[in-house]
Image (cartoon, rainbow, N blue to C red; front, top):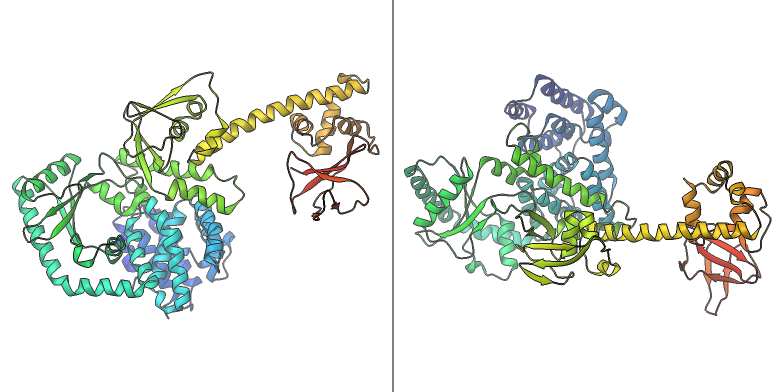
Length: 612
């Protein structure tokens, strides 16, 4: 059971200022009053939940604002507390965090498969604005999963599914492994209780033997490192239930799983890590293909370590990780280490800032997508999917989703490079532009100043960034063409009516048009004419007030009307108009339910177009 005394002790280790300590103290007092008399489903006082969440985020060594917000995270949803009062007492920053948490809480996944896209979109957008929201959300979910026995079986499964499908992948991407690992075990416990208990029982049977093997190996490694005057900290553990479950899921039998013993060496410098792994390999035989250098090649979630697996003298296999203290903090806490290394380890800080900026960029590239399902699909492909690392000819590392092409690589460098791409060379061999890049590829992009994007690229590029840049290019080209066309059509109509262009398109008349049509500028009017939304005659009639003309002009905007198509040819009914020929515009193909406008032309009846 967490207490405020425990929290206060942890806070003292974070070197907070007196003002920051006061903020946390006041947040606790406020939360204690707000939750007085409130109980959770398991019978605990509500304030204990707030304290536990605050303790969890405190273990991540976050800032005082995040800890205070964790204490206050349910004061609005559980008590008669307003956001304005939170802002008045604790400032705008904390109010915004509480507000975003409240919005997430209001989303109910009554049917996960249908609602998860909306839910994930809200989380991702909120996280891109302030990732402290996710840190508190993860801590809140961790404690809720720890106490999930108080829920019904259906509720437990719903929470576990939501957690493993939505929250855990994001936590992994941001490197918050200390919470992620426990959540994985808890989700397995509630989603597959038989499997979970079977693995746990097998571990318990051999636990004494496993712990003895770990202690013996730990003693031997300590002796090796001490003999070479290398400073170190060593940790050992039996791997988690979920970790073993993943191995079994690949088809391996329990009798074939040997690598369930893990050790971690924390050493002062990178050089110490490489020296130590060399010494260990000189004593214990390493397993082929199990050596991985994530120091030289960090994972996409900022994780850095050297991994190796060796045979012990007793026949057990030991997985050993070697890393520096900074790497260890990032491996456990991910982006939450942002605060721990704000004043030092600038290279680590820079890496985290780059990762967070990439995260925000991915989200921002998709914000205009109206469909929640497509939004989430784009994010999953680029953010939650497997990542690859490829190199520029100068050795710079580029991180891309698996399945990316040279075009994706080019646009990741710069939009101009992408637009002007004419060819690609991968590992010194010419490849087609739709070639799928592999981990470790060295990619060179050939460009030409006269080159332009190709619409065919949209059929194979992987990243949202590349898709959006290509679409933006052609949208701009189409826009410019339609503006030019609109000006030509308007000038033609002015000449047809034997008017003077300078007299028709005065500043006063243009301002009137902009106001009447509710657009931002005259180019938008020309764009509408060029795309056949308006005719030149309609624009002239607007200027001179002749709204009663009906031939060859837009009679009126028929908005929010539903078109009913019957099974016989050309029999289309538009509400409000009877006995008139109606046809659908081939340029935009409106469908049932679209917002529409109707254009009336002499001898052709009404042609229906999309209103946007």
